[in-house]
Each structure stands twice: as C-alpha cells, then as structure tokens.
Image 1 (cartoon, rainbow, N blue to C red):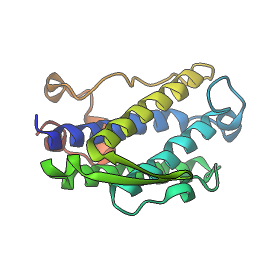
Image 2: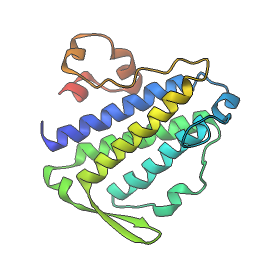
Image 3: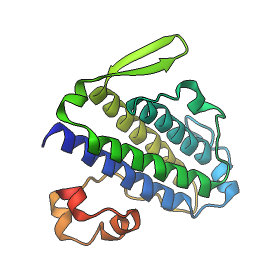
Image 4: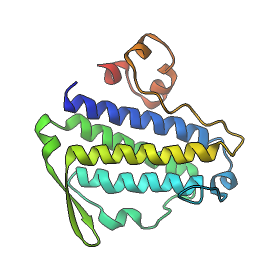
Length: 186
C-alpha cells in the first residue's frame, strides 16, 4: 500500500468511525449528552466538541491555512448536537479530500502549527498519524461514557478488511456516508 493510499484509507475509516459513534450519540437526549460523566472531559458533548476543534486545528494546518488558537474559541462551539454532527462530517470530508490530493512527496512536507509558545514544525505524515491517534483516543472515551447510558456503544474497533467487501456488513454505513466500495477497497 502506498503512503497516499494508506492515509486515505485511514481518513475514510476515521469518518466511518465518527459516523458510527455520532449515530449512537444521536439517540441521546440533550441532557444525556451534557450530563457530567467520568472521563478526561466532563461530558459526551464536551468530548465530541474537543474532537471537532482539534480536527479544525490540525486539518487547517495541513491545508496550509492554520487556524491556530482560534480553533478552540469557544471551547464548546456546539451545544446543539445536530450542528456538531454536521460540522464533524464536514471536517471529516475535508480530511479525506486532503489525503486524496496528497502525493508521496507531500508526506515529508513541513507543516507549521501555530502554538502559544511559537510555531511547531511537523512532517505531514507524522501529523496525520497524531490526528488519527487523537481521534481514536477520544472516541474511545465517548464509547466508554456511552456504556453508562441506555444507548449501546457501537462497534468501533474494526477496520475496512478485504473480507468485508464481499459482505454487506458495511454497506449501509457506506451508503449513508456517500462512500463507494471502490473508494474504500480500491
């Protein structure tokens, strides 16, 4: 698998996992989303907003238009779940589009990330790896918080395995996302 294909498939898998998690969270009431729970952030909604704002922060840097600290103001940009879900889907698409456009040489490019104490410089491939790890980490926290609700946490620990293509297990999610099997499996 080429670096371009690897990161593109990671971006599709990231969007799919967010889709599954947000679908489960959509069944919760606004109060259930905001109630204080045990985790790094105090609620499901707060954690989902954090995932989104960090995506804004890093994807904008990857695109060469870094938002910097503005990505985190306000800390909770969306109290309405449908607005948050819409924006998460939009940033997931931007990440997919960015990975689709990258060429092999682009993965070694220096990405400038504005920080309070000066600019951070990171190679694009390492920044993407960090971003995907960040997503996985915080989705896991939301997954755990869902265990304390009436909503069953969704299956998130799978990837797009070659054997899945012959099965119908992912087709509904892929159709909802507007993804084709060719985009996922080549």
